[in-house]
Length: 172
Image 1 (cartoon, rainbow, N blue to C red):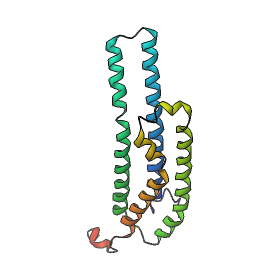
Image 2: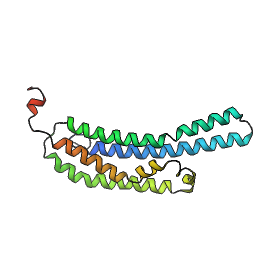
Image 3: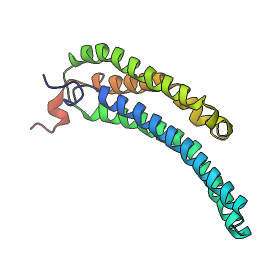
Image 4: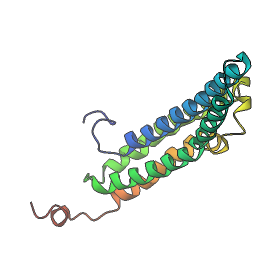
């Protein structure tokens, strides 16, 4: 057997990629908002900015707040994508055991990312941003549940379909 993550015999790799992607997107969105807020404030304080520049910066910061809703769309699309991927793969049902044993690894890894995000976001640097990104905070502090949801949906669609592969593949 090849690597568990490279063999596409289970849904673990897709669930882990979803968790890591949400973690990275959440951290990047928070950092980008902090950097852009500080940049806008420094330009205004230095006296180099005009009213049009200030207006444009405030509009841009307002659109950055859409990333809070965009992470929800990424999460939903990722879970639906895992389910669709599980439906399209044709693997034996015995691989469900590897998925069950691998779920422990996925849960532990997701909890590490969950803990890391909680640690980073509780830093005083993020105190001004926490109120602006409530959905990102909720999603990224519950990454272990999102990983479990992806694993359950992917496993259900992967192993709950019919065994008759000949009719699905067109008799080839």
